[in-house]
Length: 153
Image (tube, rainbow, N blue to C red; front, side, top):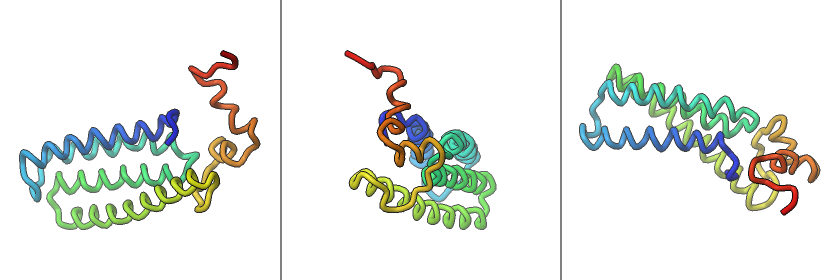
């Protein structure tokens, strides 16, 4: 994640806040119990996670991880509100699928960073693809116009 990657930063902020609240609720109520409060928090986190998921669509693999996180939060939120065993099982399956996709994304992006080029497909579109595959002028076009970057010192 580059320092200018506001999409990943927003997603990490949602995750951090959501897990802090869920951790606090689990500490005070004990694991294995369901409650409306974490259900509402999870549904809110699911809605909030859709913002970076949609904004991150030029990087399809990253957007898929964020979108699947939103789905997992929503499913778990419904389980918290209903205490349904079926929703709990569905949330577990969604969590396993999310874990596999997130692992793939992490591996693909780390290999790309370490080797300087993509070894596994990450399905970039538009400007995200140009930033990686274009010539040097294409790669530096956006950052050169960002706040805090000077043409000359």
